[in-house]
Length: 479
Image: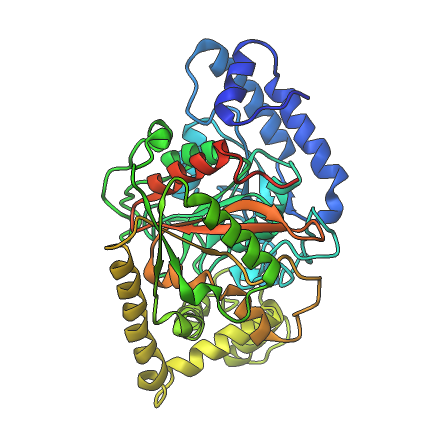
């Protein structure tokens, strides 16, 4: 098996006859089989992937291939692929197959990516550990006794274990960045609306973003260039033209000012994680201006996030009622009991918890006290970032308070689990882009990520900065 640093290099190997795409796909399929214990995949499309590899290899040799030709990619099981299962890792959708492709799937196929399967995740993308799946927990490839992070844990684990070249995940409050940090890979959450959500099963519609897990910053830039852009089927998608992220990746702005928010380095942050990130910041002083900044409303981010997202979840998940599709209980005597029993049997504990929380904050007498107030705080948090980006070009923070925790360590304490998202949720509240970059490891060899945040639609700046760090060996893929 030949190695390749990014997909552009892979295409050159195929052109020169040094790499066979079908053999490459077989290599990944064998690795998936040997690593079944990780439980990273819900479904593997072996026959489809092999046929596609043969077709795309011919395109590469004829010079008529797409931008992602031969890229072997896994898809989080919350995105629609026509005639394939779409379960959201939930019993309630156990036997459901999609009748259409999500926009992002069409874009990947049009540029000749090879879809190898669908990855495991927390049920309906609700969780921070990938322990809330109907198909069982995903294991961290670095240490199988620990979680890979969530909710896109299967997508992160698949890339970290080299079961594919790249994967697609979703990020509602950190569900790409946190597992990327725990597994030691690159994880990008783009600006809200930069990637169409058409065909994404909604958790919280005003928060959900689709992004990437990769082994290099170059692949992240190339995939984002393909999947971004306006979509008439998604009214929230951004109309602004997508830059050439790949071409512009070396055009890092001179005299870059990097903000370091004091609120992200206070009580609760593991000393080992803190010291590694501060060491990086100290190293950057040779090339950039480092400026201490304040994001004064960050203390309210977790509470605001869980009020608003659970409210949206309770609304979005009301469609799973046992009538039109999905699980229907066999134990009922009237319509009301059919609804109740179907949802009780079909949803897992965490999903039920969030539906109940969301129903409560939207209920009469509590709407103004919780939901309406949280919307106002969301605006204040967005203002904090707007003010910060008037002074700085990028912001550097931790991704998570700790490295990957043990399986079942936080399962019985929902509040402690929710606090694991303390450094990521504010970015979703503000709708801005951020990336988790693999920085280092702790004393136990567990990956530590660093979060870099940019202003709206400034993904190119994240790629440029990531490329600088990668070329300087200040970050590296953890294996």
